[in-house]
Image 1 (cartoon, rainbow, N blue to C red):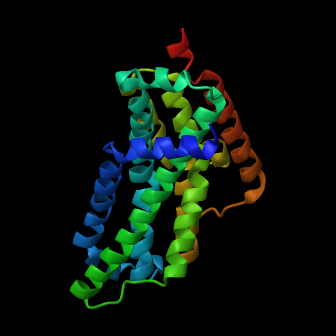
Image 2 (cartoon, one colour):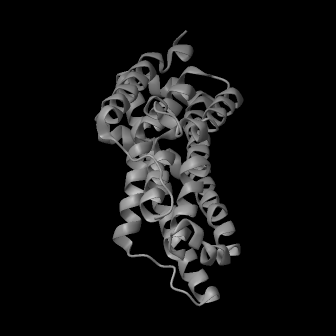
Amino acid sequence: MSFISLMGIELKKIRRSKILFILAAATVILWLPSIFNADVNLRMQAEGISPENNFLIQGFLGMAWFMFPASMVVSTVLLNMTERSNKGILKMLSLPVRTTKLCLAKFVVLLILGFLQILMMTGMYFISAEIVSQTQNYDFVLKPLVVFKEAGFIFAAAIPMLAFFWLLSVCIQTPIFSIGLGLASIVPSVLMINTKVWFVYPMSYSFFVVTAEYGKMASKLSTEQVEFIPWIPIAVGITIVCLFISCHRFGQAERR
């Protein structure tokens, strides 16, 4: 069975699950506070940032720090549970397919889910910005290129984090523990972005790139900027190690 065929099977399972509904609900919840408190953006002179830029950054900060990682933690566990419920994983393992290929196919599906949620949240930004533009009599809508560039950067930076979450779901069989540990790993990212070694903690990557952009947009704020060395080599190394261990451990409990 080809890798594309495996992905097709996994995507069919996703359509029958509640994962997409959860991602959509999280997207709406993320932007509601920004809509209700839109007037705050008009009083940001002390930071030297325009209202429209502040509206974007505040929403993306909430997305990058908690809402997106938390959604991915839950989605990762649910993705694994679609196999473990009704012992579907045993059927997949009985196929003439290497477990490595099966594990990587599921991880690619997780990346697709992450991309879809970033796309949903970006689309919801434009809807929210249009709503507050009408209620506040001020144009909050930024150029699409600016928004999509930042959203793409957030997604790319999140890949090592998704690899780590996938590792947790593969190695920890109890869903409640896997979700709890994943959610707990998100919280320290606030502290890690203020250290010189933030690049060793993949859960802080997306949050860091948004705060770096905040420093560029706010003339009276100074934030650490992204330095690709040593970040990129370490991020790639973390991703490879997490996927290697995941592929090695995938299906071991069911094969015993």
